[in-house]
Length: 169
Image 1: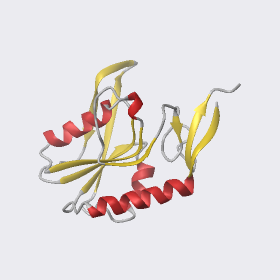
Image 2: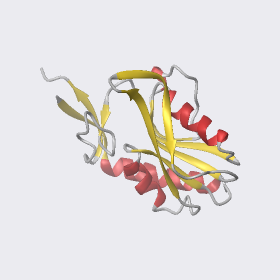
Image 3: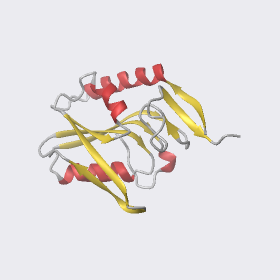
Image 4: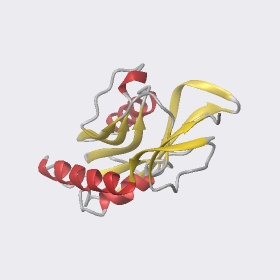
């Protein structure tokens, strides 16, 4: 597989800093970051260093497989309660909308006061479940993205920037 640079690292860093400012302008009271693991942790680390979620950071784990079978709905595991809290879900990429919809429903079911979503990448051309995030780093075309936390088979998360993964040849 070949990696083609789509968005360089400094451009991603600058956009994340701008997103932090946009989130700050929303004046959400004491928000908690609910970080969709594992891909969003790079984006979350950069975003949160600008102080946008002083209420804490809670990881959430999402499973879309039961053994080798893909499940209809993602299974969401969150270890902390968000009851009465203002939540900002931090996601690496939104494409079909299945994962972010499941996480959002889980936050509301736990009694969150408010739920907002910040995503590094948005791929609306692949949307199956309608969903509009509150904050978007970049809207991208329909390509397989790696880097800045996004992976292919647990590889390439560490790449500085966003790359398109393409077949060799």
